Amino acid sequence: MNTMNHKGYSARIEFDERDNIFVGRVLGLRAMISFHGETVAELRDAFGAAVDDFVADCKQQGVKPEKPASGKLMLRVPSEVHGASLIAAQASGKSLNQWATEVLQAAAHA
Image 1 (cartoon, one colour):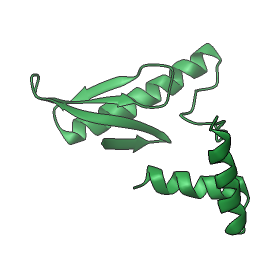
Image 2 (cartoon, helix red, strand yellow):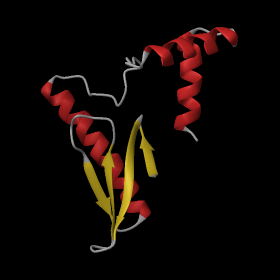
Image 3 (tube, one colour):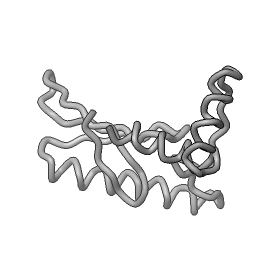
Image 4 (cartoon, helix red, strand yellow):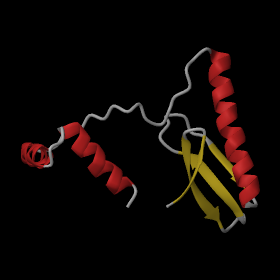
């Protein structure tokens, strides 16, 4: 997946062959924020402007801009997975939270 980052926001980038433009969509928000450009430079500028506009609109409305992630993750997994994860964490000398963070981080960056 092709992505771009700006001020803590990430966007998925695709090429629209029909219109011959790059198209981006900000990920992880309830709001749908999209942008486009004919060149990578235009795309980067449009992404920055889209994020900046989103933040400015939130400020104008008196609401805190939504961030893609709060840092709190609640999972429901089968009890066998929970138990095996707890044992793996303890065997490595870590809390389940520390262990899961490392596992998720490795998977997300693979």
